[in-house]
Length: 176
Ligand SMILES: Cc1cc2nc3c(=O)[nH]c(=O)nc-3n(C[C@H](O)[C@H](O)[C@H](O)COP(=O)(O)O)c2cc1C
Picture (tube, rainbow, N blue to C red):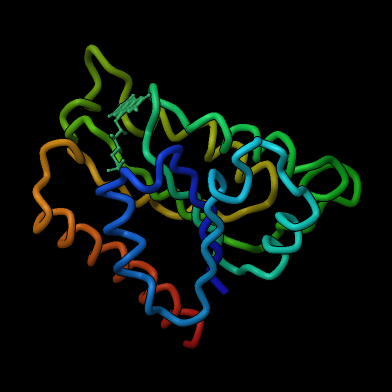
């Protein structure tokens, strides 16, 4: 099962992420948990989240980039759900052997993240990558949709098809 932890603060106003979710909506064995719709009061149901993670083989962290980081509810989700004794530490093996894919959309184009005035994209990925590895997750090459502000619907749809392709390839790989 593929579990998408989706953290868009304004899902109804999304263009890029909405296209991505629409593309994958007819794939089998994919569950989407839209955190901002599930928890508008930021009161995360930790057990429900852990149960969903337990069912998943591939976990996707999908969100728009905000200030070179993750939206606040997703940060809270990490803090609350990845608990000691469950995700890490003594007996904390619940996530071992699963894979994680960071699927992030950005307003900046790919060159915006070239090393120079801004940190490179790989640098920005490091806190999530380190978190994943610490919890025994396998970190897959991220999926990025850059330049979301300037992409027209056709371009967004093309990018979203690439996203679907990534998921289908992963599913086919599992089937062998
Ligand atoms: C508060 C806020 C902070 C943002 N920070 C960044 C940023 O640091 N880098 C960037 O490239 N885009 C940034 N953006 C742009 C969003 O990443 C972009 O609007 C989003 O990925 C588009 O996806 P959507 O159409 O699904 O909303 C920011 C947007 C908001 C609202």
